[in-house]
Length: 316
Image (cartoon, rainbow, N blue to C red; front, side, top):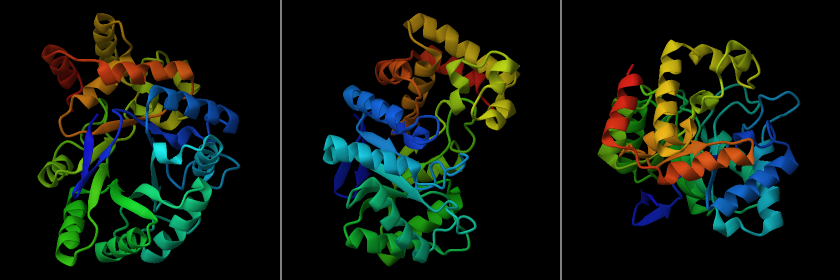
């Protein structure tokens, strides 16, 4: 079990974080409860969500995922057993990305109410808002920490420059430090993290949890034809990346998976877990049988040659 360093303490998380974007979208409330029970049985102790999940779905207004998670924890009486991560800053009707103090202070209370809890373990700035100075955003987070509403903070979708700037402000102004960074990272898209962002994370010993770890299902091997792509709930993303390079990556995953009597998804996640800078990948699932890949990935040991093969085929 890896640790995220948080000052003088550590946040212990299972090797896999479950992505709650599916709750209230591709899974209804009853199905979500069944999935949450299943991940709890597996020993997954960290759930990632956001206030905006799943505002994009027809008829939703945002907050659906948090609401379902809150109802489930209340019904099971297990809040203390889970690390709950949620995010603030995406458009919830205010007209755009916003990590101003006013928006953060209002949004946290909305999230706490939906989650039916009095604290959030890890609260992310979901996306950088370059119109708001880091001093204001971090000052707002300080107020939440002082009030006991938030334990620790993280940043998602920040450039290396803005992340470094925020860390400098934290240290110079004695404001809270982003302890966890959440970048997109998978075998299809390595460039958003590898390079400057990763260097900042290494320099400051930040925890790294990756999203789109299976590239919206492309790395599971379930998309074999254009017809398969058309059936996807994420058609635009899948179409964009369904190409010869992706097919070669998936074929390599499938060959390695056969050697380990495993699945392409498990191998793709194991590749991320083998990355020394990464703390844990975030992964969603819509069927219980998909959880087998998560369980396998946590214990799958890739050989040096297998990792080199995946590095080579996925090189940009």
